[in-house]
Length: 233
Image: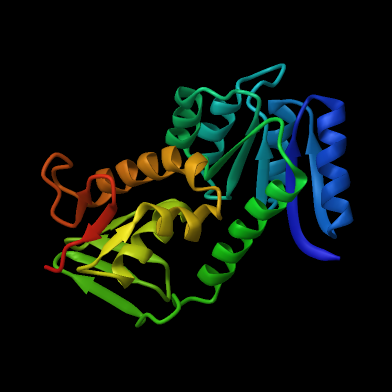
């Protein structure tokens, strides 16, 4: 049995059954919740490693659940929703979701998104990023891989797992342009087009946390239509 526990928050019984049957078939532990109140109770009581979250719940909007959970936990949250507007995706990502999967979805894609999160968590638990020294320093930016701590000018900054991974990828390639497709593939898997909105939002949030002036960034430079580069300071 896989010891990785996933909370599936879904009020639609057929969809919830599809998700739980898929998780069971692939040896994941799982919990379920049919509304927001139950979801928050499951998170606080059982501390699952990941949440699959529908946005349209009977008692509260999924965005509000993300915001509540993010006040105390960085647990990865993958939204699984019928809402396909980019504005909804951006709202969820801005609130703190790590990924966004639209209904209808294939079970193979759902499992792939879960595996991406598992690999990221495993790399973080290993303490040191692959092919990286234990501490990276660039100007006032310091990344301590052993403790997963980020400091800017001596002040610690709290990053989400996605933001940490994004910063790590840029730091490993400091001075080089890293393409959109490389970043989205490394973080979210191979569905490049659906991950571009996630990348833009995550990059915007990362810049807010490490740049003094996001309109005149020092650390991360945009190469329009290509990707991003961390400047060597």
